[in-house]
Length: 414
Image (tube, rainbow, N blue to C red; front, side, top):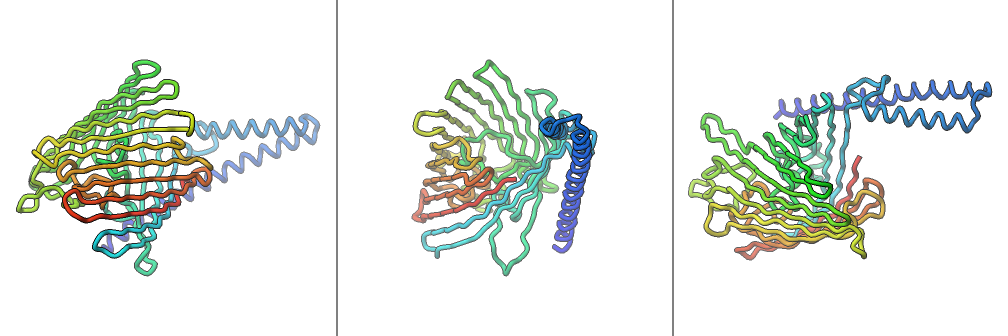
């Protein structure tokens, strides 16, 4: 444990040093260049070569040109590696209340912090990474405030290379964001970042219609000296259509698992059917139908959308399906002051429909054999700053336990 803590500390120090050096180079050189230009323009004004208005116009145009050069990686002042790095991050502060039947109410203050960057190695090749708060749970980057002001953990959340030699083909490898199109979190918790490799193909039929296909090869575990590592393949062809105020997306997915049956996977909620030894009783090769439709400016709001998913596991004879339907209205996205969105969904997840390492961990702790409601409201307080309210009412399909969960979030992106 001490060795792991030391390595994390060294990694954090190196990252901080790189950020500081980059910031100093960027601001220092930028200010030096700006200062020299300001002095030169001022001299031209004093000598009557330029009027004050002309000088201001020249300064504005010069700064805009420098900004464009930096954004395009063509600046002669800044080092190339500084210009190709694009950092980003976010902080979420959360209050959470949980009321589960036969348990005492639970109140928690939590946070999520993520910081990452993406850099161009070549014109068609980029590398990215992200660190995040939380522990080793792939379905949560939350950190609860507890343990007498203890320090909080930081983990490597993303580390990937993405190659795009043409506009219609992309290849990514490492630990990356979920490459599959998912209109809801019925199957995939939003915090899960798969490990392995994936490709995407895009083909534009006409101005309104495009075809796409995602193929993913995901490694679930590595078991030494067995030769039976649990793996997942995902195949997803789909179509996107957009014309005037209407947009429609649809996809059919097939998930093929290898060496999952009989295994006990890490981070399982143990709600799938089990063999006497504890391994999974069934395989989880599944078909998924996904769809979403949106209408811009329907008359009473800026945006109205409906979405849904249906899952069918082909191995069990019963308790083998899951589905979700929902709608949202308000603004399509909340990114600026005054923008808002409301959303509602209902889902039913049978015991062996989905591998229970994948679903949304906030919906009855990510278990299967559940059903229930989710309602969301988000309001933009300022650009990249929003306030969100998320409420779940869930219950077991076969059982009597119910749960209410309320989350109040303050989100900030940078």
